[in-house]
Image (cartoon, rainbow, N blue to C red; front, side, top):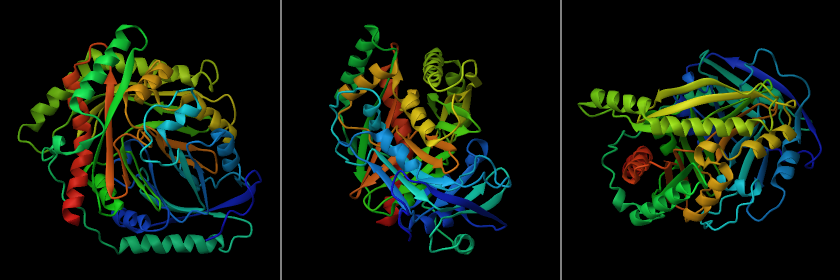
Length: 482
């Protein structure tokens, strides 16, 4: 596997090569094959992306890795230097769809990176110790276009590389054909109700949760904030391979911005339905979620219950107000990086159905001041990270209160996972519905927006509803593993 070919700060000029392949490969099988390679990264790979995120990506064995850890300095300067290392010699092949991953960086940005953007005094415990940024550079990838039902093999030609582009494309094709002839077993769905929340370790007691909500509402009544996104974290045993949980999620809880990130000492399994940002052709889009109701799939009266929950979410003044606040916050963030007069809401409040929940969403977009580049991406990140839907409004004070009230750092949860392509296109999720697997334990964190008229018991139930789909998957996979 080739090492980085030049020192950080210099440019490695790359040429893009691609090949379309007509094949009926199994997504779960390909996921299993790729996830068992070194430093795998998978985006999507389920039935959901057709309506939102058009492309799925499978990559492994990166040629470079960028990490930024707590205590280091100048994250954005170092990030920009890393992103500038590999550049394209010429525009990509016009046959490739514009927003497809054309090789580049895949990884995550921890929520706690926000302390390097805003001056937030740390008080929460960093008990997981994961890097704040971890990105891997992939010189080849398998991509699937859900809209066109097409497979793409994509590879970079890099000066001094030991493999030719043709050899890379051939190797990718062999993996895809292996997936066509491989069968994998998906664990049973399991019962979301068969989860005893009281028996699962949590980073706060029920009394602490209610006391924290009371404190949050005091801050709201005093006019310091309008909304706070408060969360709690659960921990349970997990000894199966992390990809088994990802395949379970993709089968039973498919999400358009699902992601799998593997490393030597931890793994990230995300079933996120929320897009943080996409950047393409000078346009930046963000799609916040605010408002959740449970969706039944297995009970005899599910249709009636779902219709009632759907209608309740549509008509809820509280949820409407929450999303409107976040839309205003996101529009304000975008003014720092977008041309005057270009910021607009392209999708007003809409209710979307997912396997276990209904969500209220909206889409905001703007045109960037500057052409897309590594420097522009770093400026974007500093302007909009972390996403307003998982902090509250106003953002800085909300982040300070989260730091005060949540006992442990969030790590990847409510950060972002996705790619920054060598063509400077970007697709990042909000890392909700996300499991961190480390040291034979799985960590699940869920939260919700707290406003002045929030019902503490209802807020508690919302976090449990969100957690059940993840905990049920962990239990189902673990039961089969045992």
